[in-house]
Length: 106
Image 1 (cartoon, rainbow, N blue to C red):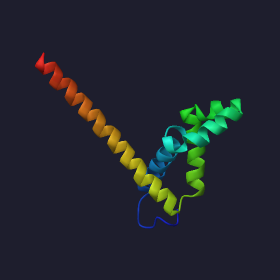
Image 2: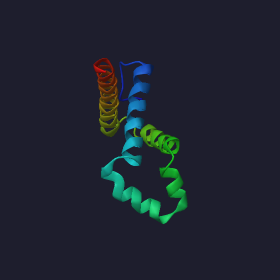
Image 3: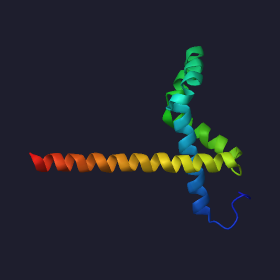
């Protein structure tokens, strides 16, 4: 990855993994792509099966990220992927704390 000079292989893989995570979530789950997703799903059983499979969408997303790996878009997706991951982690921690507080109050 020529655009990532001075950083290690592990860091590059993390960037690509986060970008892939975000792109897959964008394609499969986000509301902003629902119209596109619904149009594809309505046209073919293959598209329905492909978009309904998280692993399948992840593989195709990884391919796209690899093709675009030295671009601003991958950096943007990686940062957004980290944000989504951290948001989910914080939400999980809050749920655990809420359950612990509720259990103590009983």
